[in-house]
Length: 55
Image 1 (tube, helix red, strand yellow):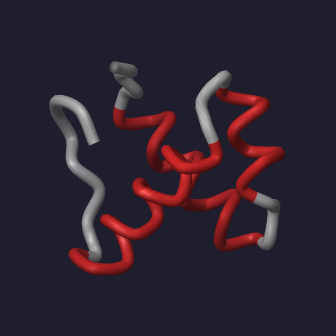
Image 2: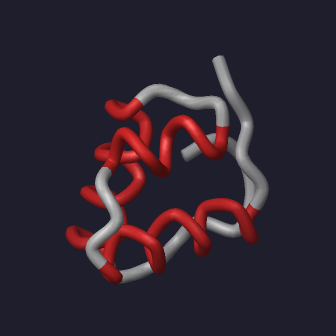
């Protein structure tokens, strides 16, 4: 399991909204593209990014 802090999750959502591909974001954060997709999906569904814990 991975743990990304709040700032990293915010950065991921911002980069995705700018049009950066999930694979490029994943490589820069050393995570899988699926993890990026899950973070973005959670944000789109809830409109918030969790401040604590795992995604």
